[in-house]
Length: 71
Image 1 (cartoon, rainbow, N blue to C red):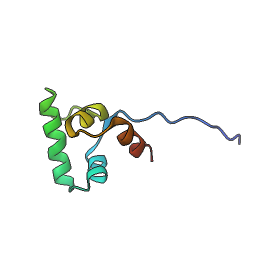
Image 2: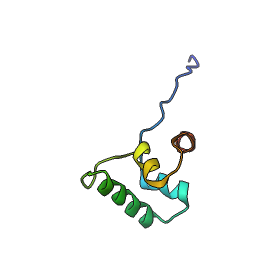
Image 3: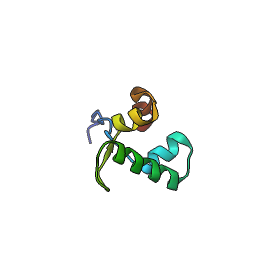
């Protein structure tokens, strides 16, 4: 079987589990933060939150967060 070297694209969506791992906050707090980000961006419940929206909301650099999510 050949060894393929495919690039895995960076994710653009962030989940509560990611927020929990990045911030060290609880699952509940991470879900609340996602809801606050949705509200701040005029999104409905259940719509995806992008890494860019998360970074804008928290003030974290997108490059650092994207590198964290790559692992």
